[in-house]
Length: 318
Ligand code: PMP
Image (cartoon, rainbow, N blue to C red; front, side, top):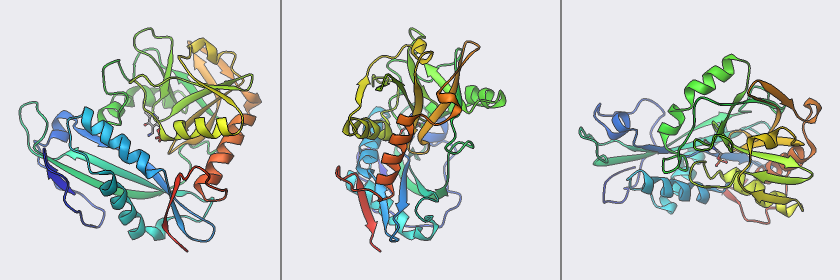
């Protein structure tokens, strides 16, 4: 779908996956004017197909577009485009429990612009790919390292929206962490350098004495849809959940740590290294709370438990 600054998007078309044409002076290539989303389609045991909270992704893209001076597709256009692409690719959706179809909506400044300014034209597109586990560890606990040199976001910046540049800035620290044997990087805030923010592509939670805590949203971390869902699921299971500033030292005596995200779902953290000190959790096993939340969320997403919240959307009945 395409549109210019003040217009609304026209109806798009389905094209075979492949290279797209882009002018070298496009806003996205020169000034990083781009946003993306990530969500998944799951196959139920009876063969029907479910999307998980697509309206939340549509709203987050709308919010991000405002920050990045871009027009956004309407909520209906966003969800319809996703349904359309998912249905066209339904043969790629794995059976229940064997993976899912990852959906990547992308909004880019595709028009030509030489001086620094919002692009005159925009393109919204959606592509998909079947996926399994995000981390090579699968469901086994991952290892994180607290990053002390680089920061992911600064107050007043774009850390709270899913803009493409945020990911370019984490590549170096993530590459170094992986070379040193860690699964990913855990970022601290850029002002005090002592509060937890998030991991390169997921939100972080700690569990202490059955209380679950996660950093509050204050514009520098992504408002994860899995984060929001897990907070509700955990409260529904009777846990106390706090959104508050989390000191990095709190990692040292946490009972469990886990990450949440569309790609990582609920990933238990087995160890965290901070200033050369390695802390291990749960005797390298998956913590009870992480396991319980993983199971509650994935059962809901795959249509294996009753969806009392109305979070899943049926796109194809068996
Ligand atoms: N933080 C960052 C930086 C991310 O890229 C993601 C993945 N979208 C998340 C958190 C988790 O967000 P969600 O649960 O919506 O996938």
